[in-house]
Image (cartoon, rainbow, N blue to C red; front, side, top):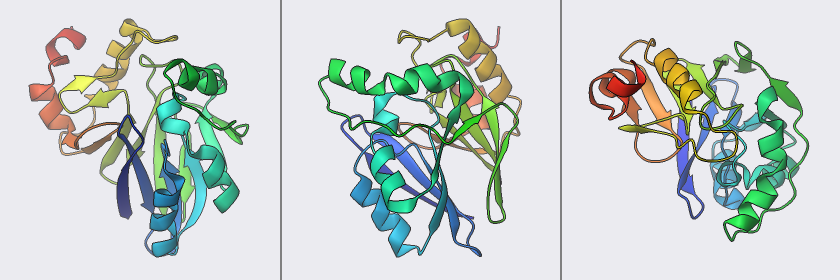
Amino acid sequence: MLIKSVVVGPLQVNCFVVADEKSRKALVIDPGDEPDRIMDIIKEGGLGVEYIICTHGHFDHVGAVSDLKKETGAKVLIHKDELEIYDAAKDMAAFWGYELDPLPDPDVLAGDGDVIRAGNLSLEIFHTPGHSPGGICLYGHGIAITGDTLFAGSVGRTDFHGGDMQKLKGSFKRLMTLPENIRVLTGHGPDTTIGREKRENMFSEELLL
């Protein structure tokens, strides 16, 4: 498996390009901005993008979706409970003082337990609401891509529309059942592991109560 990351946009979102090295089929996860930089990774790797996956619909995670879809023809995937947030991304961006191009309609409205494949690469969708209603994490091949559900030492905020601390607690608990050696690729900031977050996350004791 090939994993490339690029930090994009003013809010410093981690965008991941994950690919099957043999077939060169790929997934792009959370293309928040700077589509040219993301496309450079795709072109340099000779990759064919199968899906553009948004872990949630906040504007800083979806800003380059439209351009990437035009360039690659890939299918856009969000969770079925995230459509309202995704559709409101342009207005949310304007509220924060940013301009966002109109987003394409999602091609796939996914659900918990769905498996996304690209060549021999397969990642399972975990529905992890709390930061947003349809937030998802992607799990497989020794990694968990957690969007804004889980960060190194912290968790996503719940004061945006659709946020829910009780649901976030449940999502956090679910992630903590994964093996401790799982590498966690977060939506902002550095990588971590499940084991490290069990021991060191400032929300671990509170959220596991």
